[in-house]
Length: 336
Image (spheres, rainbow, N blue to C red):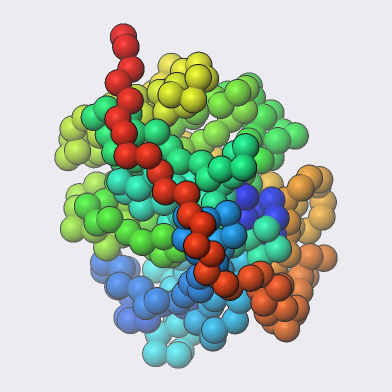
């Protein structure tokens, strides 16, 4: 997850789902459609967009700074109704609801990757990094982001891919009809997963849909994507295969011969990476350069106070620089 990763490596952190639950309003009963979530998280920009100093910090409902990587729960959990604790619905729809942090909206190119893991620009050789426009696409062809509280451990070899993790949270391609905004936290249904092998590392790409999307009620697994959005998975495979070629790099490879695996397979991948994240945040394994500073996982050795979090954010310049590095608007045509 390159967009969120820089945040993770410098302070981005997610809170374990078993430790933190998002509070959502409205009555929930078994068999009912999940109600629309109230905005539980907000963002604060510091610095000039399209400049190296730009940062997008996250706040919770109380207005306190948090880490989107560690302090937003992985799973959506309906724990209160009008302020009163309720029993969580136990059906497939609710068991398959996860929080997603949107890093890169559809049809945009900026790759956004410190403590508190803000979204920030990905810098390469002193310049902002943008994904190339490969004909016929413009930028990312989905809303792109990550699942909080997950981590692809670079020290553990995945049995199904025979490669270690890429040291990032799990990436998500949200395929709904709406173009979302950077920093939005949405609820998604997991549909399947693609196993990208990037320079010898496993880089899972979760396929999901916003639970509030008009088509969400009829799309439940990867085969439904093939049925209701024909060509989308093929385009996704081509996008990930070729997106680094304009940089002079070889085509990416895939496990399972590029086959998209099912929802059930994807849920097992998410479960294991959440366990890896929990071990990292509890200092039971080596997280390397990832910044694990968090505000809400109180039993984590990396926990900080709200005052310390505020000081971290205030140490980042909020001045607007005149320097910006806009992307080149050009198409790349790749020969066969």
